[in-house]
Image 1 (cartoon, rainbow, N blue to C red):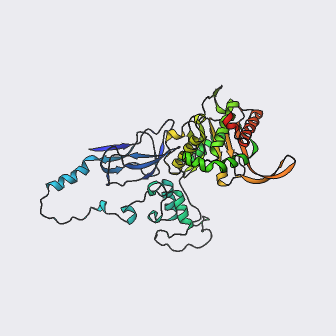
Image 2 (image 1 turned 120 degrees about the vertical axis):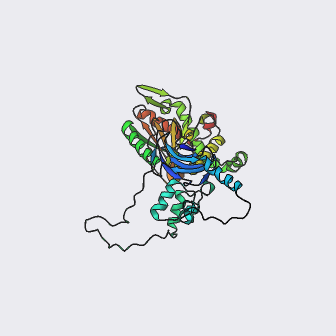
Image 3 (image 1 turned 90 degrees about the horizontal axis):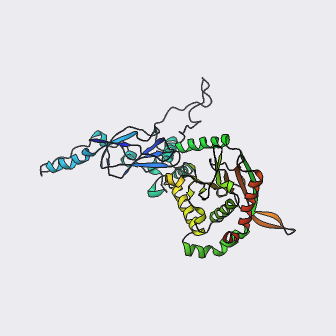
Length: 412
């Protein structure tokens, strides 16, 4: 009897998803626990696995469709797979001529015989550019083809799939004024990108956002890292980066200015006495902000290790909803992409976000002398409904002081 494969509960506040990519085809055998389809939610992509072994029956929800918890995605026929061994056991021992495969079992092309494991974004890009995913080398987990893999393949000028040729279209606009095909590419916006767009607009509409700037001399941190990097790596098995210093500095400043670690609920201010720090990461499907829980209780090594693990999960698209839940304050580092200065946008209901930027050697005045120092611009965006300008400026100055004298992070 066929058993339904349904959309699972996707997490708190997640009420719908988009069918990303089917990893199995109709008529293929599946094992219990084997991933069947990937769903794109506003936060993470979720693999839906088979609850039992059998043969995948009719697929009810195609790629790109919107589904909700409880909706039927497909069916699994648990008796179909058992029928084959039973039939072979009852067959006579004399050799029988090999029967030709059924039409539904005959692959129509090489890619259907073994469909490459690829992310939904990579699959859509390949379709738009006429690429054969079987020719793209996957660098994701288990050889999974990512968006970056497809982009590298395109930039390298690799051959595309052979498509039916069409008569050449004359240059210039068509007689009715339309532009010829090939001048535009239409790509479906992913569920995550839709959510990012909606939340950015929500932040603009609902928060009174202002940004204040400062700059920090990174000499002390860079000297500590250069002097202690090898010993730190050997002792803890993880590199000593900048994020642990800034996370510690943010927590120190939040202790002094609790309104930056709060939110507005109706006509109340909710100050939080825990420090769940979001670390913004640029992932394949868009920006995600995994959260380091109780960051104030973690050592430098603990922070570096957890941040590295979350960033790796973001790159491999294996973040869970729990990894992204909550967060009381966010840090984003545009410097890894070369940004010298930017104005970060709040992630509601948070009322503060710190923007780090590229370290650049610049001339600065020090003790009446012009010297060259590695400087970083810092940006704090805050919700002016709750945080006054004076408080925001002092908060950012406190971060600057802690970064420029990192020994105070150990003494406070």
